[in-house]
Amino acid sequence: MVFSNLVFLFVFLPIVLLVYYIVGNSVKNYVLLLASLLFYAWGEPKYVFLMLFSIALNYIFGLLIDTYRKNLSLKKLFLTIAILGNVLILGIFKYANFFVDNINNIFHTSLELEPIPLPIGISFFTFQAMSYVIDVYRKDAEVQKNLFSLSLYISLFPQLVAGPIVRYNTVAEQIKKRMVHLDKFTEGVKRFIVGLAKKVILANSFGEVADGIFSTPAGELSVATAWIGIIAYSLQIYFDFSGYSDMAIGLGKMFGFDFLENFNYPYIARSVSEFWRRWHISLSTWFKDYVYIPLGGNRKGPNRTIINLLIVWTITGFWHGASWTFMAWGFYFGILIVLERIGLAKILAKLSTPLQHVYLIIIVMIGWVFFRADSFSYSFAYLKTMFGMNATRFVDGQALIYVNDYWMIFALGIIFSIPIIPWLRKKIISLTNYEKAIVPVLSITLPVVYMMLMVVCMILLVNSTYNPFIYFRF
Image (tube, rainbow, N blue to C red; front, side):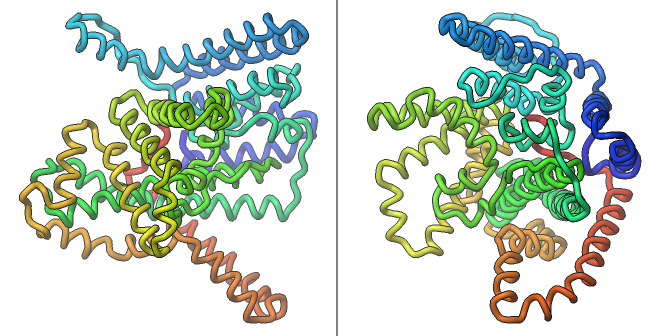
């Protein structure tokens, strides 16, 4: 089930909210747990047992780590087994086919493995479970002795299938006790509507453009069409994923949870390092805290720092999908971050701010080509077309059609990918008597705006069958 599904919006969510607020506080967690398991089982019931196995695995080893805390060797052993168990789950269900195919290609063997469907959100709930046992080992979090509470943490449906990756120590107290008041619930509803609008109005529109262009052989595209395609995909993946994160944060508030922000206008960054401090923040911090720092971080000299960065970013790419193009995408950003660390950042700092933004946008879009394309050959052919190296026309009729049909969506996408609304809010506050002049107007107009956004989303959902979530496959 997805948040932009009519069944979720008009059946599942209203029923869960109604039951949640009717029952007493002692039962609320059980209602949410049952709803979360039903949410996950909706599309593929058998994989709910995989999640239950993951919960049991991490619950047991969390208890063992805590019980034998004073025995360092046993504690390390239990942590190692827990991590290997989680990695094995990912390895079997996400990477097994990839490894078998590559073994066959390298050694000319004929090993056969039935295609294993990818369980939705497996990377997200597995990483959350791993962070729990690691935090218990490090004493960054208390062990959870209530199996149902840990189950709720790992399976909580607002952030279950596409993040943000919620760290246990940030919600442990909220699982025990949380309060919801009208203002918080209202804020959650607003945030959910904004995320839904990002997804349905913007991301789906950009997805139609990107899919149409990337399904065309790169040699048949004009330079302009290739650029339209990658700009569309860059905006699609941003509004798709940040929209989902907004909906997750909004749903969390409706049930009393406060999740950390996952996006902070990444396209206004002026370096790759800054971009990744703004994009998918929960994943970046996860790899920093659980991979980069344990490898030694920047504490073991410059050469080791470079190696650690390249390892982390290659794994980051592989986390996104079982494909060499994903690994190359991660390695590509690792190289760029290394270059910025060893001197490129100082050179960029001497450039004007607009040039720094141009550098970042072009670099990121080149990376998105590898992320979106299905093969290296198509990626390189597409890049050659983008930069006029494929002997194709600069502009063709296809490019003009896309510009004519989607110019308003592109304009809206660019506007809302930068913090223009927060900037306008600050400007208005600084220039007016905000409380007296603006608040009364906003109290009337904003509810109307949110209602209109919701109506537009409903119309588009009813009339469209194109409604994918990019990060569901990760």
